[in-house]
Image (cartoon, rainbow, N blue to C red):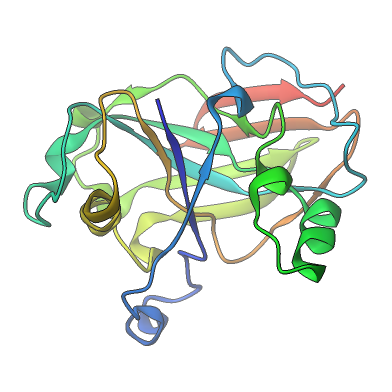
Length: 204
């Protein structure tokens, strides 16, 4: 099982999409040991003092595919969840000083908490999904998939040019352009899809 992340994939207004759609999607991977399920509380990672949150919709791949066409791409999605793509920004900054990769800054244990999944059949249009993030009861991020630079289909088609997608692979599809920030020990993190609370944990 692979965890694939998509960076810089949301804009604030649909009018901004075309200018940002260069064809060069930002892709990274995360080890499966980053995954946290079942709304388990997460120990605040010892390796960072700057834990940055990004709420994202997560697409689960339902069948194997390579060189997937844009027309067929969404048929490879079986389920959708909401998750947090965590980044240790201080670790990332130190790596960038030496032109290093993102791996340690995004690959630590607990860096990919996700909710339970909803069948893709529950969504009539993947381009009109609402999701949001609250921390300690305060809304921090609000997302809508119409503001994605690259759609679910475009992401899947592009990634499959480089690597075979397998059943069970997870794709974090990007975070809203506004509202990113830092979590602190003790924070209560809650994320919803279409108003339904699905992800609910504390950093302990």
